[in-house]
Length: 299
Image (cartoon, rainbow, N blue to C red; front, side, top):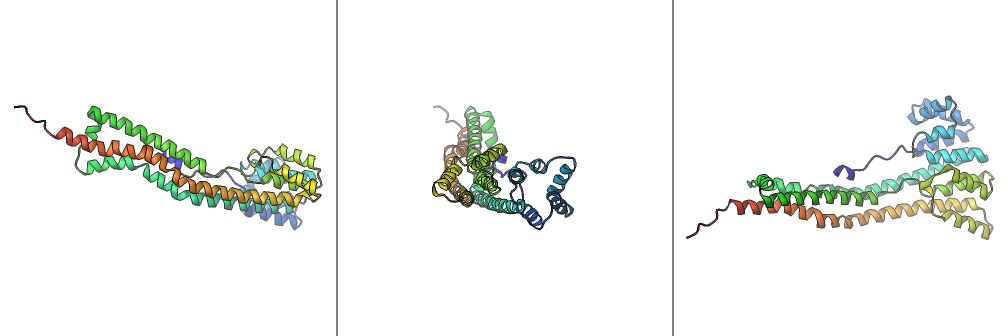
């Protein structure tokens, strides 16, 4: 269970520098496949995989998406831009900026989570430290825990409490982790579709077809589109501003969740870890002294 607290590596993620390089090449006039080949010739593994897939007849958006979950947003933007005729270089430059912001947000949250998660990992070893401390002091702690009825009861209760503390702590740490996906990506994709001249209804359909479940913002884009229609202003810049605000909000929310984690971790510590330490570390010492003391003889 302790391993659950360690940060799991994120899924294969689109790298902003790679996407930005492609944007520069496309803006310089390179064709999409040629741009990927130039990057692949530089030794980039992701670009080499995309080029290899495209040479087998696979469409570029599908080849990009096949690189992993983290590439779905790039694939969606590429496919929508190609469908509506939006300038692909400009689109990728915007997506690279969004990826950079999302990456910075994720890094900030992980840094904020590092200290409370590390403290939780250390505290989970407290019951074992109690057992070793008793042995170091010369008490027959293991014998008491494995032979005495009261010792066995302490052992069972202590192990159960330790396991519960680990499960509880792991759940708290996982809940504080940043959500997958890029906040505001649906707004970015709608902006891409509208930039290419698609109608709002067509833009909605193109984004829905990409099935980026993690990017849905719960109606925020619809509010922006209604505001655009009521105010009579272009929706593209409003959508991009909304996407930037979504990423800023995600960063703030992640930092707040990390700050709250430190206090929430006190719950499993006080309810499970410390009682387990008493049962496995302190109670065997008392029982050992009690069992080793000869009973007084009667008159």
